[in-house]
Image (cartoon, rainbow, N blue to C red):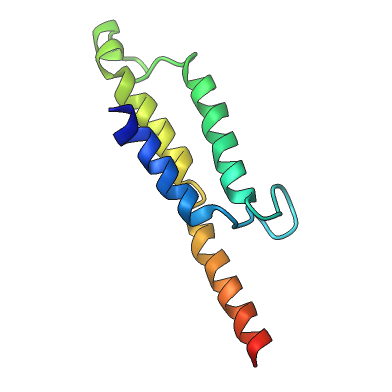
Amino acid sequence: MFDYLIKHPVHRYAEWAQLAPASQSHHHSGPGGLLTHTLDVISIALKKRRGIQLPFGGSIADISAQRHVWTFAVFAGCLLHDIGKLSSSILSYVSLDMIIQN
């Protein structure tokens, strides 16, 4: 289950984001910055998740029964939080390549 829900999505994301920067001039701006940034965000969020009982106000039974679902939701949100940067990075590289060729 871990491979299917966690490992496989991370590997697929890494295939797409491997050389993309997270930003043009701020944090993680070099090649591979987006992947590094995303993995950092996942790590920090999952560590914080350990100390938070979800759903807020839920019964002990609900919190226990849903703990893996909530943890996966945190993981998925972190993995996808900057997914739009991939399309802008691809467009930037395509535009730059077109400028250089012309």
